[in-house]
Image 1 (cartoon, rainbow, N blue to C red):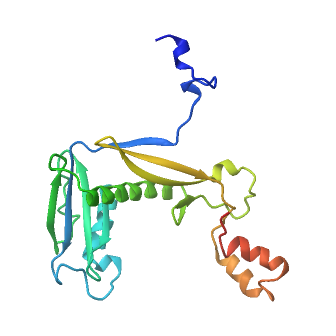
Image 2: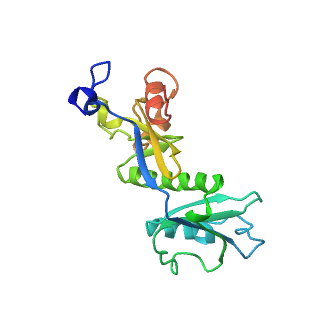
Image 3: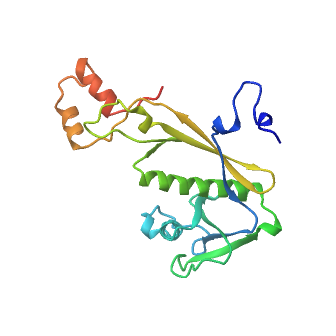
Length: 224
């Protein structure tokens, strides 16, 4: 192939192109397991409990701490939850991770096929992993968007460091998990602190004049 073959009609080469599509994982060899709570009709506690007292949520937190690819969801029954764990290769040590009241209700291998339901939950588990990584970089999640708030005295000058991003997942071919990254520029946001609350409480007319501008910037978030 000659160098000229790398050029397209608009005069740009592949080396000059950028993409918002990325390959994340190869599904070949993936394994998974589904758990539910076996103490109250396969449901969690009847009364909503703190995460540390809910067997599903507690196990989910432990999975995150162990860097496992996982996701929990509510079942079709009211107040019922499920925990799904995904991995490749050897089975992870789950002795100190899974709550003793949880029971295995399903196990799967790539060789036996990957249902649409399982694939959707895998995408959500990957999204959870990306979310944790972005949270470590001081991003916050607002709806589908991940946004980096400005510091207290930071001026919205260098906006390239505060671009927002959102992810869409899809399967390319039979086994290649890819993501499409959407980039946007939203209005500057700031984390509310105690000083902002005192300022709003002490304002005689919080929705008039200058006070309204403060409220717009620190008490609510507006996206264009």
